[in-house]
Amino acid sequence: MTLPSKKPNRRRRSAAPEPARTTASAPALAPSPGRPSVVQASLYRDGRKVASPGTLAETFRLLRDEPDGMAWIGLHRPSEAELLSLAAEFDLHELAVEDAMEAHQRPKLERYGDTLFVVLRAARYLDAQEEVDFGELHVFLGPDFLITVRHGAAPDLSAVRRRMEETPELLALGPEAVLYAILDAVVDGYAPVVGGVQNDIDEIETEVFRGDPEVSRRIYELSREMVEFQRATRPLVGMLHNLMAGFAKYGTDEELQRHLRDVADHVTHTSERVDGFRQALTEILTVNATLVTQQQNAEMRALAEAGFAQNEEIKKISSWAAILFAPTLVGTIYGMNFDHMPELHWVYGYPFAILLMAVVCSSLYVVFKKRDWL
Image 1: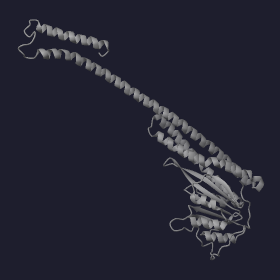
Image 2 (image 1 turned 90 degrees about the vertical axis):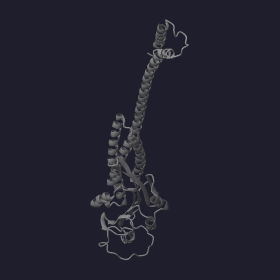
Image 3 (image 1 turned 120 degrees about the vertical axis):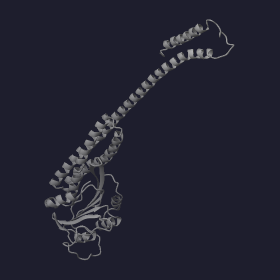
Image 4 (image 1 turned 60 degrees about the vertical axis):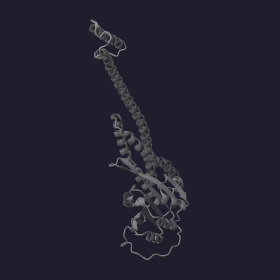
């Protein structure tokens, strides 16, 4: 894919004339009822801002009157009517407009005639929640216009706009320069995310070996975020290489070529780090599963040992209960007060009963001892 060449005298669809307005008194924003979708709309000539129209209609009118100008329109979750008005004014392809409406697109770069459609996935790290928040950015790039449609909090393009306005010589290169600056901002936004994820992985490793029961859930959630991060960064490598392939054909400015090569290096580095994070999380999850299994085995072994010790105690108690039961049985029988009982009036009855108790108890003791019950 390559960027469109600069064509200042682009044919536009005719539209009804708008009432004249003085750009000096026009507000920077024209919020629609409920929520403002037009973040900022500006008109530039030779890299310098010449107007800040307050509505899309005014932006269209001023751009028609400025054949050498460039419009930069920033939108945040625009309505369908706003996107359709942009499509009618700038001849945007219906498929690209449909993607911008629905969002949830993977990063891609597509050409529709003289318009380039770019989808980017931005990311930011939320320290309080210790999680990664992803946003989606759609960019329509034409010969004399650039439209950004943002879904989500990231990225914040106000810093990009300020930086470009502070370097008019770069902004004078046209929409192509703005696209490279946006790419650079999105990629630079990945660096804090990489740092935050690295800290999370270090903490997870500590929690794994500390035996934190909640660490498995945290590993799983971070792994899901890394899958999303990988989907955001990996397609960018091919996209940037496609852009660099058109340098010679479209005579891209040398300064812009250097910018894009730098962005491509950063994307490649980030993509490699994300791949490393996924591999590290997989290994940590394996180690955690091993440690959990070892802990469960140790607990089962301890339970088995406790059960064995309990069984040994029960054997001893049962053995002594049986030994003591024998004399109790003999004594109980001979303790009954009946007149007619065998050996009741026998002279040797008492010694015989004692001897019988001793023999039975000794026999039981020997039997239990041989079986290691005592």
